[in-house]
Length: 317
Image (tube, one colour):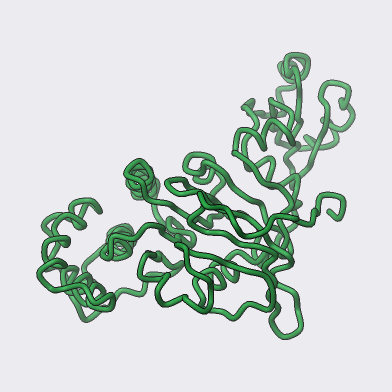
């Protein structure tokens, strides 16, 4: 992985960026968690931070919000220096955390009302915004529903609505669809796309590569606190991965594929599955047609292939 690591020379000072991070460094208990990290997020875009567990994503978000002290580097958020002006900056920020932290003793309406008061927003203005936000979150008619009666998807959508109560310029979304069923995930994706179309900026962390591929205009892949790749999703796929993938699975699939390396450019193995990366998959598909004991899936290369190539297939805890 060392050959993929690059040190950034980018400095803070981009007038078109709503978030700028320059040479950010952070350690915990003597262990480097974020190492010379630099990136910028233009307004009205979705920027993704991807990486395996422990890559430094959540720590980076906390540093950007001024919730964790910086050991080195610079952060400017919504035109404010972090951490010195973090309180002022956070007035223009909405946050969707990994875990829902809605107040279980309040209704949907009360959760939004109380949260809006934290920003010093007048009750009359909050009252005007709440029906619009509940409708946006697909929760119209749920204003008086106790939190305990909501499904997991409803709670997640209410957390998104709550993050918008102060009409923020930028939203920090830390794995916003983890644990949701496909219907709820797709609904949140549609809402997030709408926010960007309306001029909001999103900073997204996610373990769902299809989510990042759908939502992100640009993203950075982190590993061990450093950016190892950055760019638009399709650009990263074109740069790092052959265009076609054939997944072969079944008994002896990996051995079978490795003996036929000439039919593809590269083979990776995970369990009993061989991932064969091809420029032209036709010869491999022809060979597979005569192998009744093997099953296969032919697909276009995806962002997940890039992620696994750059960070490895080993499990991270």
